[in-house]
Amino acid sequence: MLQNFRDNLHGAAKGILIAIIIVPFALFGVDAIFLSGSAVEEAANVNGESITELRLQQAVALQKQQILNRYQNIDPSMVSEDQLRGPVLQQLVRQKVVEQSALDQGMGIDKKTVYRLLMEVPDFQTDGKFDTERYEFVLRQMGYSPSSYNKLLTTDMVTNQFMQGVATTGFSTAPESTLLAGITEQARDYYYLTIPRAPLLESIAVSEADVKAYYDGNPDQFVSEEQLVVEYLELRPADLAEDVDVEQGMVDDFIDTRIAAAAASRSRRVAQILLERQDDQSQLQKMAEIQDKLTSGEDFAALAKAYSEDYGSAEQGGDLGFVQVGDLPEPLAAALDKLTVGQVSDVVESELGLHLLKLLDEKAADVPTRESLEPVVRAELTRQLEMELLPERIEELKDLAYNAESLGAVADRMGVELHTSKPFSRAQGEGVMTNPAVVSAAFSKSVLDEGRASEVLELADDHVLVLALKERIPASQKPLSEVRDSIEAMLKQQLAKRELMVRGEALAARVKAGETIEDVAKGESLDWQVSLDTKRFTGNQDNEIRQRVFAMAEPAAQPVVEGLVLESGDYVLVSLVKVKEGDFSQLGSDQQKLLTATIALTAASRDYQAYESLLLDDADVATKK
Image (cartoon, rainbow, N blue to C red; front, side, top):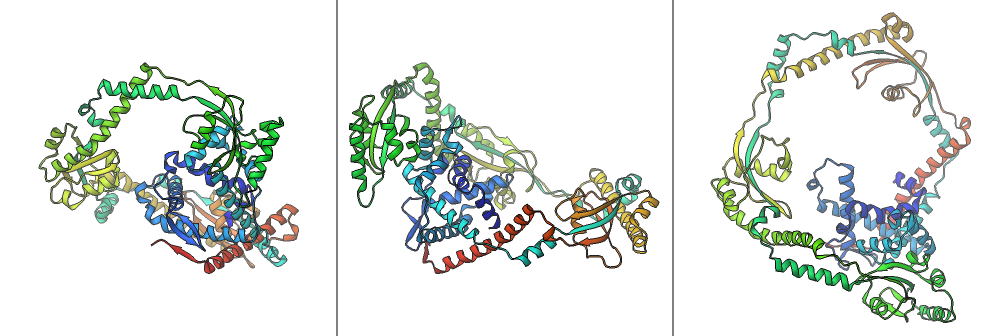
């Protein structure tokens, strides 16, 4: 939550845009935004307002993709959307109660502020400038109209405004600032010497008898996993290429249809003035005023800038760019068909509101040649026929593989290649043998113990696989020759660590008895360092050492002496000699402001969480069972 507040305080509005548009568009691409959830079906109801099933599915898909992007090596099948559904729905409910509270308190966002932010979204730009065509395209791919998207964006900005309002109520007291500065600005003086491990490792010799004794005494550490070799066959659409026949007549018909469609389509550049419906019907009078101004000769583009409520195009003089057949709602398309270049339509009504359209330009259709279309159409038809045949062949494969004595016979009958895997274990394999579903099937009781073929595994919508056991390689103890080097290295490390600890404890005793780190290091020909006035979060010293120093008790009459082994294996002996508490009054003005703001931000975060909890406790929430 604290990080959220930090993010919200810097570029808050742009952050919302990223969350609403760029993140889902960039992560999923176009098609993934169109989920199966209903825009009407209710997933939850919060104080009488719905959270739709579609909104929930979109949020779940976004959360899943964020997890996969953060943990790139994770198997996507391990991230269950069913498991994410509950937590994501809870988050949507929390957002809804905050939104309702913000609106109840009269918060709002000016439409021109929304527009100015839209102009800065990179995904709405071409060559660094706002592109109306791209803006409309991206929104269509996400399932929004400009009006519905602007409402969603406004809602999220109002919620963010509320969060910022809470954040700015946080404050800090002088004692809190003094206490925090005493901790964060504390400085410590310490000396340390280093006993390197590398020379010890080079000097240690491990006998063959020691290696053999360790190998014999720890047999469980050197057991290889059980491995399998399986026979398998796969079925994909491409495997059915020889089974489909694309007739030339079919290709010709598709080419004719595409050429006709291309010839019939023309690009028209359109500008519009949009007025949204108002409860008091005031849009009718405003539209009449705009028409009067047009009649008197005023410029359409200037009026669009002044009046249009489609803020994605208003600043461009209402210019929507070039559109084609099917891009516009039917009422707008019908009105446009009646216009010649330069003409303005009568008032047109749509679900978005009232429109005036102006035809700015026309471009002739770009009709492809038959020669360029034929290979594309043939490939598409082949793929289509393969996909249509695939379910039938999958059922055939299931029938043949069920209780089959040999997958070789099934492969011959199906006309596909029979593959043999390399040995693989439950934890390690290559290629398709890394797929969790395949590994699980291979090690299943029916395949492993009963000698049957697996069920036909659907690895994707267009990819299935069936397998059978060819060879079972039992777990066995690895030969000494295979593991000797690793045992020797491990024994050397153990002996080196033991010697380092013994030597380090001896040197620590000398320092505790009154010798200095410097004297001991020089006498032992070891490197030593001194670090004075070192802060908790600054300094060039090794972070491992600094963290340990700031975990050590404060020295009294004598230095505090401790030893630690670094990740590198080196032993470090530290002598902490002085601790100086941080002094708030000695900080610069910027540091004081930052520290005070941090305290205030933490308090605001705590207050926000408490207030959100109160809203949830008082809310009437009903979720779909």
